[in-house]
Image 1: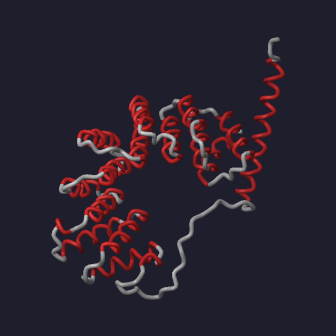
Image 2 (image 1 turned 45 degrees about the horizontal axis):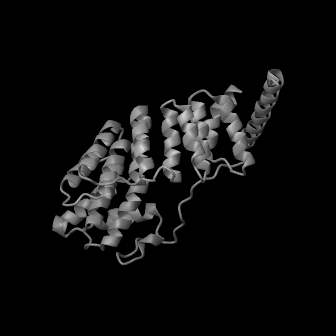
Image 3 (image 1 turned 135 degrees about the vertical axis):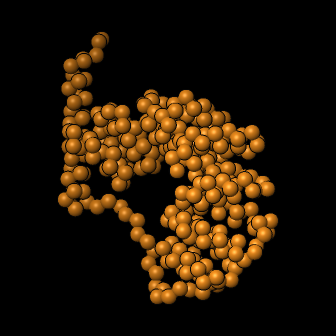
Length: 300
């Protein structure tokens, strides 16, 4: 028996219509202020003055920690422990504070600490902070001086290139990494897939996807989410759908990545249906989900 095409089309249009209604309802509540987006808040701090250098810095929020670090190093404070430097550098990465990252580097040098005396981990986090905060060339200078280059330091450079818009150099760095025999990890692949997506380089993206799969890393939810994004930016919806279907555990980021891929490729009907499926599965949309769907909302 042949399928009733007319009935199928009618049912399909009902599905689209109902999903549009759900989307309009959610957007209306958000825009009227009756539904709020989740937001990030800094941890409150009860300190009115800067703590001493022996204080537990993890108790400070990032903004106060960076302010304290700048003040301490400008006044040529004594050398801090490596753990404190690491905590400050991690805050630099989160807040993109290049000024503080460079002050940490200068502070260590000013105390005549030989590069050979600086632990590899501290050097690597300095490279990461400089690269992530926009001083990629300074990071490369430090990277070239490393006695041993680990997957962490390579990934710091690869992600630094990618985040500074030097996507092709990011892919080239991975090639040099392979020559040195250093194996990439999930963080490496995430940066590489982002670079491929920004370049719309589908061929290279598929090649790296195959490599990640052989290493058993493509099933990782963070890698998988980035794969969906990459294929969406490269215009390959079937590959994006396949990567999405392969995700064993789907977070709101996973759903949003697939919705975004549909929207970017003008598959608005599929974006709406996936949004409805997402809500039926009990997944609450976040800021990015609504940002993707604003375009759909205004064109409905």
